[in-house]
Length: 222
Image (spheres, one colour):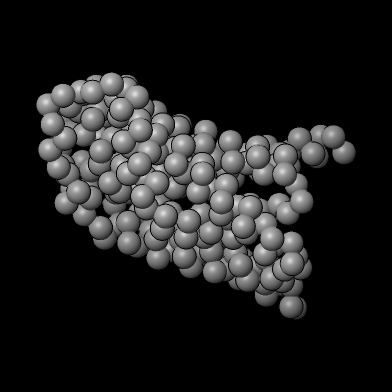
């Protein structure tokens, strides 16, 4: 029994990390800003930009999670959860298509010559991310698809939110490391390629998850 509990917690943490990566990976305004600062100011300025974005994501993740927990507490039957997973996979599919088709290079702008402090870079990234509450819909889609919300389990949800932040930080750390290593070869086209790759992965995963959930729903009624 304790072994099974540990497996469940590890599975929950892995889902949280994946949600954090999905929420951070698309090259939105903060993603482009992170790339710009890494190229122009240095890797740690880019990473601190990602940290600012991750803090904002944690706030929206918590708001979405605790709000959705009340809904899940009422709609607790297995059939309803599968319907929510289908809706979540469709939303992820649309998000992946939008990410693939979008051109993040249009968000590139001159950020000035001064580096500023690390604190200033982190705070500005937080404000840019926090000014876009539409991230809530992405969290709703991920929570529904991964059955991430656990009503009446505050400790598990707190651990889940921390895992989302860790996944986000893992993405920003990896992204800034990669850009720093290939800075001489990285240009605006590289941003497009990253965005198209992310969009393709999200689309593929959403289709796989949609088919899996539909199959389970079919077996449920059979």
